[in-house]
Length: 246
Image (cartoon, rainbow, N blue to C red; front, side, top):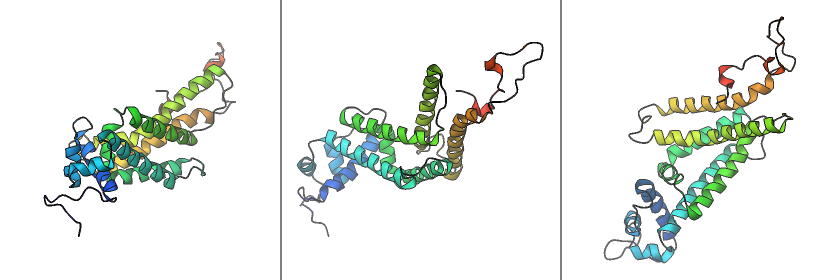
């Protein structure tokens, strides 16, 4: 049985308290946000005296940084386990990653809520952590897209911008949908499996949109009328709706 002080709180100086307090901080920051959270709130959640928090941490800024580091480390591990970086990116790997992140969100609601609440408003060290996390997964996201073969620098730049948007959409979709599924959210009453299937389908469409232009045969016949030769840019058939540019 854990030792407690006379007021029912756990003692301050036990080394095991450090992770216990970070866990409490994850819950409180996720519920209240950083500005509305005090050290006293975190101490109460952890059932320790406030001096225990200050014994292990400089203040709530350090606690937020460590709480967010825990979230990012967990997500990094989940994604790596679903598709190791040594494996090529393909549709199957993409769906494994989506499913794994979805399961993590459902199994770790406190961490998922903290991610949703704090990522957009991150500053200082937390922003640096967020930027490092995003850049890592942006680079992984390119694995799911075909390599460009465009020779024109201008076209290559446009393609890179389109692929960057596609990658960011791939990364953000799952996490943004979880916010909509939160209690009281517009998707909160929908079956989890139905929402997951919609996310999976959207992800595959995003990847397919980037792949389809490369699949158009170079020798496709020009649809222009015989009496008026069409310019080269009009010689390819119009893309399918799913391949239209955003």
